[in-house]
Length: 146
Figure 1 (cartoon, rainbow, N blue to C red):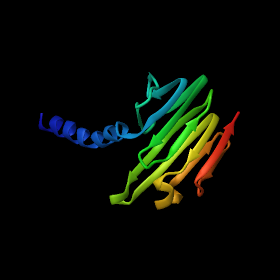
Figure 2 (cartoon, rainbow, N blue to C red):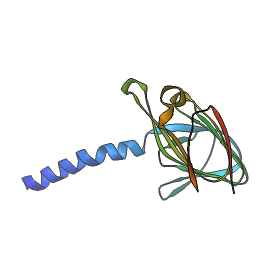
Figure 3 (cartoon, one colour):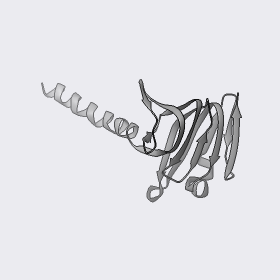
């Protein structure tokens, strides 16, 4: 019985940080025109102004539709009609020196305006598109993926 309790305790200690990371807010929907959805794991949620975004979320706009997103470091991302973006990774912990932004632009039109991460740790930003990865050093980027 002690062994079972020890295994359960050990598993809860190891799994808790992973679960906590998945539920941390990394940004918000700031603007919405038309309709859009947030894919969170197996859940499909309607996008709305003020909705929190989590690491791992995918945002998909319908036609017509557009979404404006603001991340916690003030990065802004705009998705045009019929677009899809995956927020794969985000760390903005200035006191701990941890910074990263990893996004996958799947399809559509995107405008990216860099936030504080690009000023503090520009090498930690990765934007991937279906056939390439972009290391962002500038402040504004427009991408269209057919």
